[in-house]
Image 1 (tube, one colour):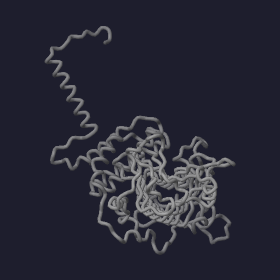
Image 2 (cartoon, one colour; image 1 turned 120 degrees about the vertical axis):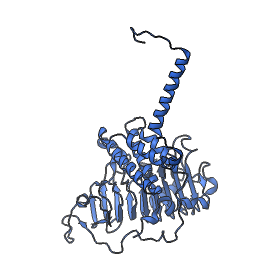
Image 3 (cartoon, one colour; image 1 turned 30 degrees about the vertical axis):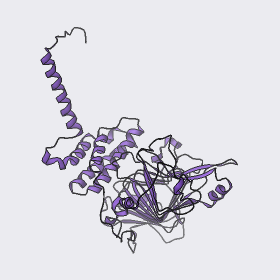
Image 4 (cartoon, one colour; image 1 turned 180 degrees about the vertical axis):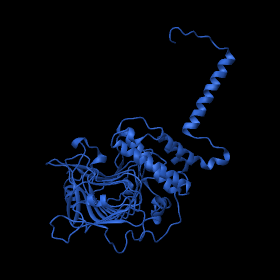
Length: 469
């Protein structure tokens, strides 16, 4: 107690009243800040109240430097959209949007080593208040064959290499064509046709550039490539992407996205996506560590070719991969080189998040060179289906062909027993020499068929609502 102030003890009853008043005040404050009270007849509105409170306590993006400011700006967009979706009755969209917002909040606080923002527990409580009412719809047999692209494509912008001898086009870089697109395209897509050639550039499709459609002339023919990697000029993983997409409704076809940093570099992303309702078909992703960063929201990959070494499909999106070829390549150099490669590192951070990776009818194997090295030194060249990047990692392989380079135990721990009691790693109907059910690690699952239905295109990402033209 500071000098000069005298303490006069209260009578016992007075002290009890004071303590009771203080306790009541703290309780009221907690209810106002964490869970706005609602009378019994308005309990159905409690999830909306949680979202409103999360928006109200969300940190101001302008108070932070990039890329943290970018994370928080996107997080606030997603929170507001989640509230609008919930109030319109679209609960699945609200959950996906809130899941993405939570991830963006986490990324900022983690990046700056800050405690969780006050909006973080509110967003988490919203997710967990609705998550048990899982996203189920009546299955539709027509969804898997639905066309993701218009039958006839008329470009709104064209890109070609200067002096290529091709017919004249509007732009010489992909970024310039993207910049020319109108903001917030709502109907149809703004189509950017990219002629064959190698385009050495980093491309960013920002939040306001919605419904961008990049169409090339074939995997390996149209290539967008760059070589940023972690540690160069102080870059983090998020900033290394050759192609980075935030605008919703993104689509791409017949094109290659590459990060050419090489096997000796650290994390080096070829493609990063935060785009909701995005579709990529016949797209090649080439890199080594962290090739494809499926960061947030609903994403669908069909008949793609994904090449990498360590955690080369990672992030915390609700992402489905259908009929994709997933291929690992050697990553070490020298006479004594070896490789412990991993396909998927899922980053689900909260049990209420709608996120995870689902691989359906995919082929997972090594490149020709990797298989040859494996045959010569099978204990030195190993490929695992995944490892838990974050505590609630969720990954499922359904009816996939698994090549001989897949380790019998299937999955790799991250560090000690981290996440092994909270993750969900499953397989259903795996085929091929790498489909060794009896040897799988004890914390993975052979998923029952009835549970596989929860991870259908309709249930997991509501693809029947937005994939088909």
